[in-house]
Amino acid sequence: MQFPELETSRLILNKLSKSDGQALLDIFTDENVVRYYDIDVFNSEKQSLELIDFFNQRFADKVGVRWAIRVKSSGKLIGTCGFNSINLKMKNAGIGYELSSKYWGLGYACEAVNTIIQFAFSNDQPLGELYRIQGDIMIGNAASESVLKKLGFKEEGIRRSSGFWKKEFHDLKCFGLIKPEFKEI
Image 1 (cartoon, helix red, strand yellow):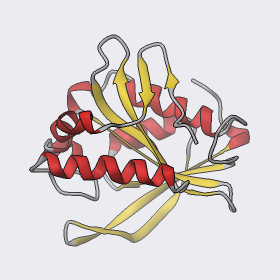
Image 2 (tube, one colour):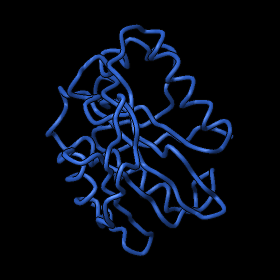
Image 3 (cartoon, helix red, strand yellow):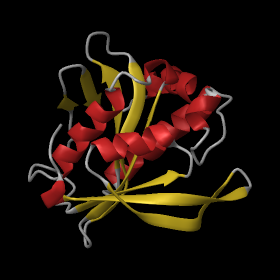
Image 4 (cartoon, helix red, strand yellow):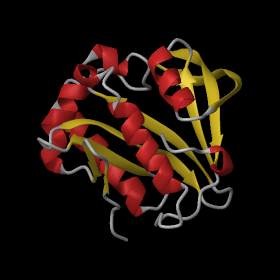
């Protein structure tokens, strides 16, 4: 199965490669980026290479897909986005994304996530038809919440102590988007 490459007016979304190791390390060494993430700050390129392998293996196993987010004009890796888990039987997926803090507030996250949602709800999606996409956000992550709301996700409630990382439990705000409600931005 060939990895799907997507494009917007400003971005290219494609497969992560080993050559992205340093750029991904630069993103995950930023405490602001991992503040609401279920991982600690990276301290070696080995960690970013392992994450690239993990993301790419999930696609090979047909249980997830993660795209590199690149600025079209330069090819620079500025983040990743994708579906952390895909359940084809239930026709749903969990969404995830992060962006280098140097690119926050410029609309790149919305642009990239909108594109992968449009792709996921299309009939061209190689992993199978999706009907529902869910996003779980740690309480306090206002920027991520704003991205999902802008894309039409509906807040569905709080999942108490649903996450455990960095040695503590976290309440997660659950957002959902179903195919008939999606409108491209």
